[in-house]
Amino acid sequence: MAESTLLALLLRYPNAVAIARRVSAATLHEGVRRLERAGLVVGGQGVYRVTHRGRAALELDAALRATVRRALGS
Image (cartoon, rainbow, N blue to C red; front, side, top):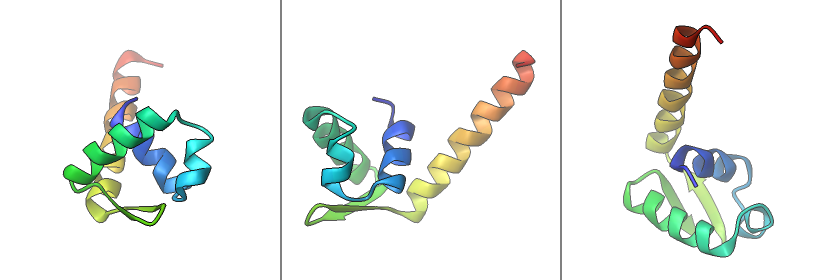
């Protein structure tokens, strides 16, 4: 799963149980650990929080996608 997709899901569903209903446990565990190591997410006791750095990464991803869409004329 793409990091930006998982970040967006964690932003919308910070509770581990809520997000586990939408993503497989293996994908969630591996992805969250990767995001935590990058400093994009912090978590504890089943609740995750997207950091300022994580929000900035989401904004950058959205801007890049918009630029590509404009360039392709979509």
